[in-house]
Amino acid sequence: MRPPRWWSAHIHKFPVEAVSSCNYEAEVEPRAAGLEPADVDAMWRSVVALYECGLHPAISICVRRRNQVVLDRAIGHLRGNSPTDDRQTPKIPIRHDSPFLFFSASKSMTAMAIHLLDERGAIRLDDAVVEYIPEFGRHGKERITIRHLLTHRAGIPTALGGRIDEELVANPARILDLICDAKPMTAAGRQLAYHAVTGGYVMGEIVHRVTGRDLRQFFGDEILRPIGIRGLNYGVSCDGVDQVPENAVTGTPSLPPQSWLIERALGVGFKEAVRLSNTKEFLTAIIPSGNIVGTADEGSRFFQLLLNEGELDGVRVFDKRTVRRAVAEQSFLEIDAFIGLPIRYGMGFMLGGEWASLYGAHSPRAFGHMGFTNVLVYADPDRELSVCLLTSGKPFITLGQITWFKVARAIARHCKPLSDERQHRFRCYQKL
Image 1 (cartoon, one colour):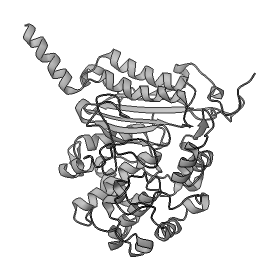
Image 2 (tube, one colour):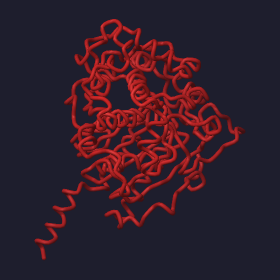
Image 3 (spheres, one colour):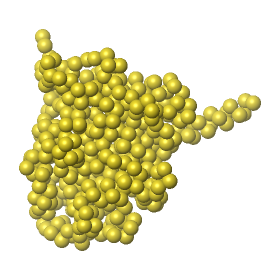
Image 4 (spheres, one colour):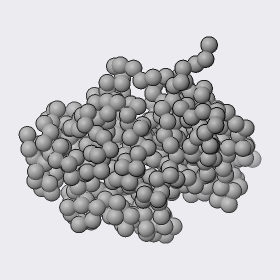
């Protein structure tokens, strides 16, 4: 009996070497970053295992340790290898420098644009949103602050419920009108509930009204250009659409009640969200909460900037205090009313933990963000790590996703925390 069309096994398998791309010029000898070759091999094997589980037509990863690139590789196909493609569909190999959609991992970058404005005195995080967008105060939203948006406590997680399509994503002014007209679900600050889309549009409009530049231009001018990143911005040009890997629904079908929660959070159903992400309208718009496009190297480089507390290659973009405040804990493992899990949030970041962590065990100071559904960018100060893992497969809830968690776990296991290294050296010294 043949498996149904949605089953991930329909992703065609190829020899790993034939579908891999490595940036050999960037990758350093592992010992230069305090690792052994076997450590890097183990991390890469975890990525290969993720590819071989059949949930992702393409995967790209970049790992920096001690500001040295130890992995910058990709595996799979740009397009032509999704479950809906047949064997006659042309298959275009992925490259290590192929740009991917970051989806909700974009939130961490939008947050840093807001933090930069606060650092410069242009705004204050505890200002009410209506001070910058007066029409936002309709229906009792006048007490919502910028801090509430950053910490998913604004009470408007579903303001766009069921109405997002290609026409709407290309019309940010209409989206802002819908958000301003929405009634809050809860009072400002009362409940933690993940704002998948809405909060980003409000923050993007604040940037626009304060600076006179749209979020794409401000982010590029003030954050990316000083550190030499040419990509990693909101959307792409029309000419760049074909360079972004095609996202594909994989794994088991989405089922209630989880599928209902996703539809409420995103404004569309699971399959429709994936389809929409491949459209020209989505890929060329400015969607602050969800359409940063960039390479794994660029994502890792951005988080290296944050790991260095605002400075990269001798260029300071953020004050140290700005970065420290952005990643400071705000929610203390409170249950997120939409995700249904206890998540530690900073102001724009999902935080790690000693045991329950997206970033591997024993990562209490790690910070980053997850993207729909298996995208992950983060930094771990204890391990001097900045990591970007990008995928084009969009599985719902499936056992195969355990393999995705194993990638971060393998990285954490083979990149020992600095405290462990110091203790090991001290024990060696005592034996002398």
